Image (tube, rainbow, N blue to C red):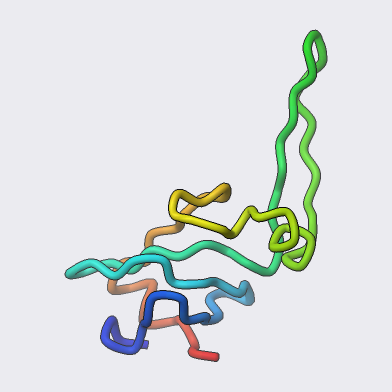
Length: 87
């Protein structure tokens, strides 16, 4: 995909993962992964635990609502954008 092919709120595939575009810069695209989310929790006196939930579960609890988003925004530069596929 070219940078002009991305739309804020639009979805695309990269490396087998599904993403939603959150911002478009002059040379980069920002997006959140929406096919799954990893959640880390820490209870007092306990080690950090992580678990992966489906995109549907994450959407239902509001992890994809934003900005700001409850999940990491990934940066796609010109080289990354070339291997992205539109949905």
